[in-house]
Image (tube, rainbow, N blue to C red):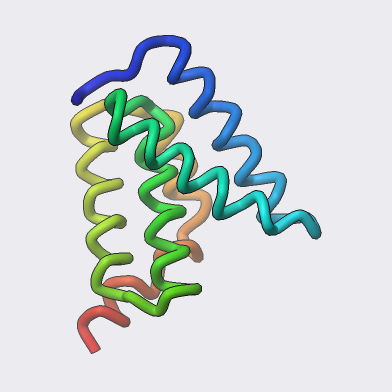
Length: 111
């Protein structure tokens, strides 16, 4: 689905903030929980401007934790497609400012 309702967009916004705070603090246990919950909301209720970031972070988890580089690369491609489809300038900023999160996906998947 193309769009979430406003309540779900606000929940995704909070989860996006939680992922950033938990990634850079000792509370890393909340990072995967927030990413997976945001991914679930996106699948159930549609994409929002926070969905590309969540696909990026899910791909990062697939590559870094699960070592599934192919699925991580697919998540990265979906994130980029969502950026184009949704026209999310704020989300593009996050993707550009955090290239280390997905820089190795395609090269690792190609290897």
